[in-house]
Amino acid sequence: ETGVTQTPRHLVMGMTNKKSLKCEQHLGHNAMYWYKQSAKKPLELMFVYNFKEQTENNSVPSRFSPECPNSSHLFLHLHTLQPEDSALYLCASSPESGIGSYNEQFFGPGTRLTVL
Amino acid sequence: AQKVTQAQTEISVVEKEDVTLDCVYETRDTTYYLFWYKQPPSGELVFLIRRNSFDEQNEISGRYSWNFQKSTSSFNFTITASQVVDSAVYFCALSGGTGRRALTFGSGTRLQVQP
Image (cartoon, rainbow over all chains, first blue to last red; front, side, top):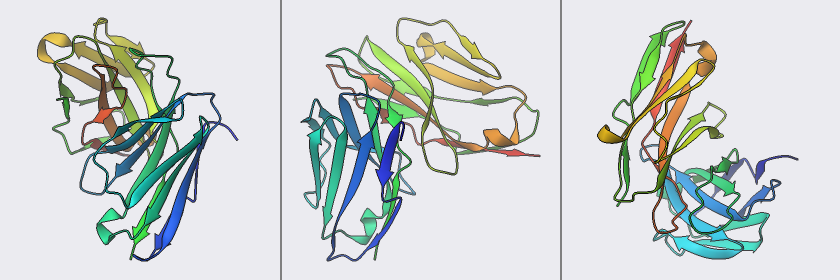
């Protein structure tokens, strides 16, 4: 596998379910990101992890819980979601080397989530 | 606060026409980076270009060219001799400021190239 992979590609869940999205990057990067892309809104940043530490939480509801066990893997745990959470969830990574570096982010194909 | 505006929601052109996608940004930072990404129907965002705030040279890559004008806070993207495969949503993005690396995206411009 190369680049950034995401599983599953599609997910349908009920409001009472618990599920997890997985992201894996094979690029040796140190920073990983979760973005949400809804039909009627611009891409929204959710979380940023840098060297496994969460450095940004963009006021995301607690029903979304990220986990970054190492620099290559990022999870988004979902529970008691709402229908308005239906969206494309995109993971990205970048080769951060310290403060002041603004490298391009490489994106995965996304998970299309539908909440019934 | 940072903001990226892509005023063109959707553009439709006929193959071989040239098309320019507009991007206007707002930031208080003196150091920042601008990006363009392409999102084809498959959904994956594909990186096209990065430009830093100190480099106002225009760039050309094949049929793609970018015009960065700091004076007007614009970073426009031109596709010359468009092709059907160029059909996608194009996003302009901005990062920078006090170590914040995450991207602020514009709302995107959907480009339809008709054969």
